[in-house]
Length: 149
Image 1 (cartoon, rainbow, N blue to C red):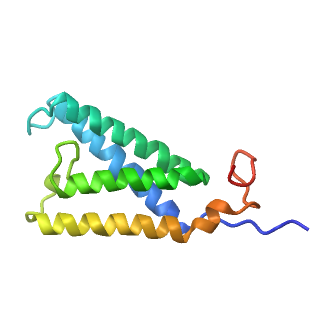
Image 2: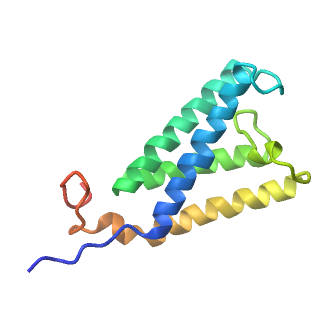
């Protein structure tokens, strides 16, 4: 008799999609627009661009792997998200605060820190509460393999 398969939790799907779009792809696109002078806020330094591209690439790879159910990816994504949001809270030049491009009132440092703590905690909670999905030996991946190894 076949075992029931666990479906990917909705929270994992939503968070990994959010990370792909709002933390990796869109900020990288804005930084590239700054590099090529399409946005008139000045050119970022080469080191900051390099760090941003590496961070974004790591987030894209780990968020994509999470959607496939890779266990290692949740730890890497949580670490990269923590680096990103701590940098955002302290105004690191390798991060892009998307709120500066939207017509809204000023974001003060307490609001940035609160937002960073919220997103880091939400990622940690979803990735560790849904840990049984990552370890289910009867879960079948899209590539036909089963289990988590």
